[in-house]
Length: 358
Image (cartoon, rainbow, N blue to C red; front, side):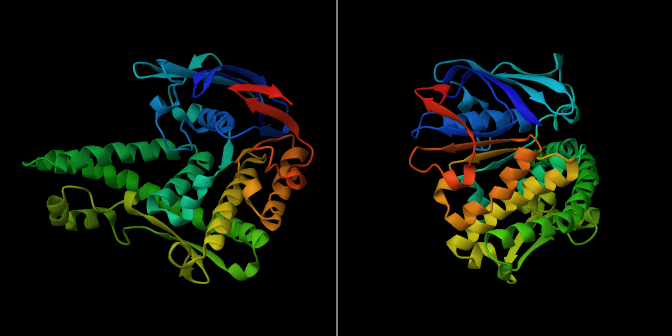
């Protein structure tokens, strides 16, 4: 799988961008604030329909414009044309000239894994960051997971809105509770099944970057250890007091343990960075194992900040992508270009909102 063409209009700092990309490693070189990361963000957006920077559509529109367009041609087992437009009044998504009605028909056409400085939040941040990591993995490997998660989120929002009212409608609350429990139990089942499959891959990745002595262990901790429906009913007094749903998959945790202790609380900064990189490397390897082809790797100004040992751990990923005619996009400045890791690459210069072959 690779992205053969990228087209942008009024996206971030790009009034217009049209670029063709072959398989292999693409090195995007340029000073800071020239738009290198914006290209990676656009590719990730086409794959996942969201920004890895955690921003909404309005932040991706070029200053002074009403909306943005992003599109591309993807070559894999077949050829696909994807197009999306976003403005405050209009949003559209099409695949091969037809409007996308169900996300399950679209997701998986383009698969990506991004490495960026924000990855450290997987270890240092709140449980929400780790839940989103689980959800992304499941969305990339289980076709029905994202619609299931959306069902749960809609029920949760409606239920929370109801709990905030001064007078409660018991029948309506019961309806939302049933939907919450039905979707929530399936989400927890899929998360529980994911961890023992993913954990060994992450352990191996962590060992390659640091050492086997790190003893990484990943544990799924659902907020409910009993029957969800019963627990939800028993939590009703707390819910009325707090005016929100206090139990469910939206409160789950993914524990990252080094030598049996929380990496977030007790790990050094170096251990946290190593673990964050290992998790993303494991994500790429897990997707390759599940789909039989590597995802597109988006490496945003990360390699230049790592020591030689940690950079060397990326080499197998890059080689695998090269051997399978996959694709890697690496951003760097002229000063921190990691030559020994990237090796043979197609070089691009990013300057003054223009992308050109170097």
